[in-house]
Length: 475
Image (cartoon, rainbow, N blue to C red):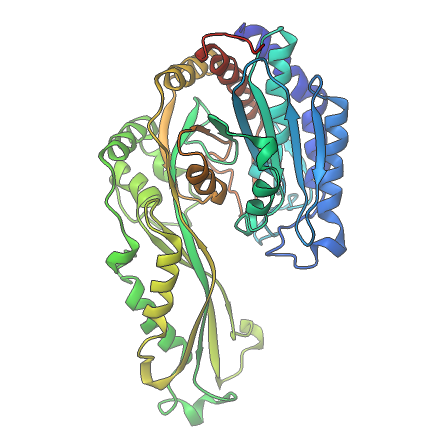
């Protein structure tokens, strides 16, 4: 493969159609079903699917077949089947559903308002990860434009990832015969430590959580009357959370939520820390004089990739400050999100969390933990020599710098699912969510130059995958 020809083809495709199509995609508020239970009636998911389907029809890969697969009661899935030149299969994955709006967008920006500022395309979903279909298809077309062969390719773009990929297992089962047994999986739904080189994800954390209900009264009472007599539901929430998290350090306490960190991952964290330096911390928009939870860069990387972490991501039973009277509230409900190390079983962690918070309720309060999610993490298998060389070469060819390996703190349920189903497969997990890109939060953006280079890297890996077979064409 000629890197200069590949880069030229990819850059032209992004300039000619991909950015403009992503602008239209960002306008569509197709929130994941977890955040929009009426998604089917609202029709936004269908609008996003149709936008991508039309784009694909204008950029079709050879004799490929594209289908919008619809199972009853489930979000749609785009499936593209591209015949190859050898009897091997590569599965390429992305998703098109989005996180909700979130507050805090700066003036002039908004979740459904695409804004192009220099190299950044702002708006919800462009980087997480609406670009995946366009990058995957363009990478394949860049190969074919040079007359280069490749394996059988299966491209899946799902629409429930931000809800924990609840619909994906059914589609994987329904498409099992058509997918076959891929020996390489390329997933474009991850992050990068900077925008200067290729970053590969080696692990993903799991996730459990849900709603913690603490109830002390049948109805609210005057705080001057009940204060000092009726226990505060908020205080009892604090006591319950102390079972889970050390308030002083932020460390999750119970051993059941921890695992031993493999030595290879520690070494990779140290290497990533040497590349990132202080940028390990600077990527986050700290307010004022807020300091990070540690100063050791390698340990900080392990904190966000291989250790559990708790966040209260929502609450109810609390009126807005301007509406709050002097009332002792009857209950508090907290939405908890507990990130789990890659090797901790999500279902076991969910059961442990429920037991920990519901047992022996403080001061006789009504306590209930409704677990909404339980997802295991993922730890990549050892990298084959050919793939390691390919990734190193792609990073040097298109970034001019070495590739870096690092775990990610988020979850991609698809990876754990595929890891179990195809234990012998190799994985290229990458993405464009780098410093300040702020997936799930306000001011999310896609770094276009990085996305272009990543697209070219995918093309390079696909070419090397074919060569790793000995270059023997099928038939």
